[in-house]
Amino acid sequence: MNNPKPKIVIENLIKIYGDKPHAALKLFNSGGTRDSILKATGNVLGIADVSFKINEGELFVVMGLSGSGKSTLVRCINRLINPTSGHIYIDGEDVAHVDEKRMREIRLSKVSMVFQRFGLFPHKTVAENVEYGLKVKGMDAEERRQKALENLKSVGLGQWGDYLPSSLSGGMQQRVGLARALATDADILLMDEAFSALDPLIRREMQDELLRLQKELHKTIVFISHDIQEALKIGDRIAVMKDGAIVQIGTPEELITQPADDYIRSFMEEVNRAQVIKTGSIIRHTTFLVLGEDIPSEKLKKMSAEEYICVVDSDRQPIGMVNQETLASVVQEQSDITAVMETDFPQVEANSNLETTFPLYQQGLPITVVDEEGKFQGIVEIADVLENISPSDN
Image (cartoon, rainbow, N blue to C red; front, top):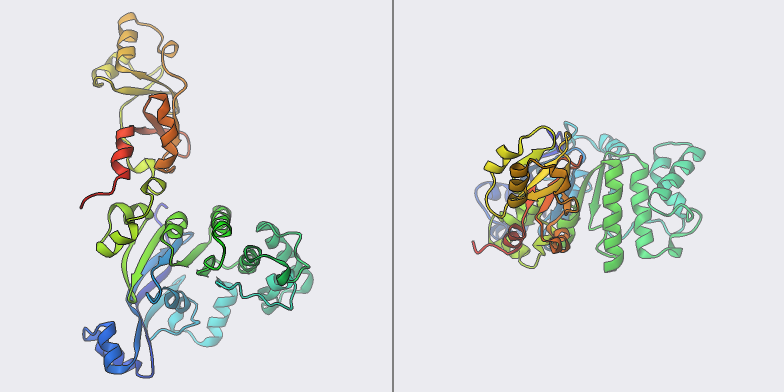
């Protein structure tokens, strides 16, 4: 994301559960820990002075073990839980300190939520469930029915509008919950353990569905999860929480390659690094030869033994590869490079993960890496991949 614009800004957020929040807050501000505050006041520190920003259009995952504070955090954003102190800005408005009337307006217009247990009305049809938020907003019956059916179609349930939720599987019911959240056209989706009640296969399908929809809709999504594999799969960035505080915020690659401490490192121990690390982050930015523009003899001088050079067209799109020996013969014989270059060579986009490169090395050539427009970025050798899929000893 270039020059990302913050959609949600959280500053010094604190939540304390119990009947003595002010006394507990005073202890916390004096350096008290969660355990010492609990012992002294009987109150529980849910969120411990958290500050961060979520960018517009970002799929931001908050993950942690049970009791880490992640669900409290997401419920503070839409004020289902009132914070003890701090600020929560949505589009510049501090929703932590607006009155309940204004907060209801924000929930109806800007923030939708998808719950773990679907939260569907059992006596209403699927379409009526999706229409609910629109009905509360005052939309007329025909218009909201049409909008509900459109959103059901977008999640693959276009034919199920007149059925009751009990007729649907768990995965289908969660799709209804997602369609209901999308129907309000809210810019922000809050998803609290939205897929954790689903069977593993259905859960993976819902993760894929969410990623598909996000490519189309570009919502700002705050997704709560306790599953590191899920977080790494869907998150643009991930915040890892422990004891109410944020231990580290980073991209999936950053969490794996630059863990902040042993706590983060332990989370990453069982992760398949090849499924997370992108080819674009390990490419060698090698020289290339622009066909019809560059002088082969000049490029040959820059090459080392056994090295390959990529031949690109005037748009910098790869069209072939040659090694040093082949290029030397072209220079010596003043022959046509297009007649001897390898035109069947492996190529991947920079945003693809390392796992996708494994079968491509069977061709015996380095892999050419391109950007989304197909322009040459560099190459990746098998040694680069092997080095990066092995955890560091540090």
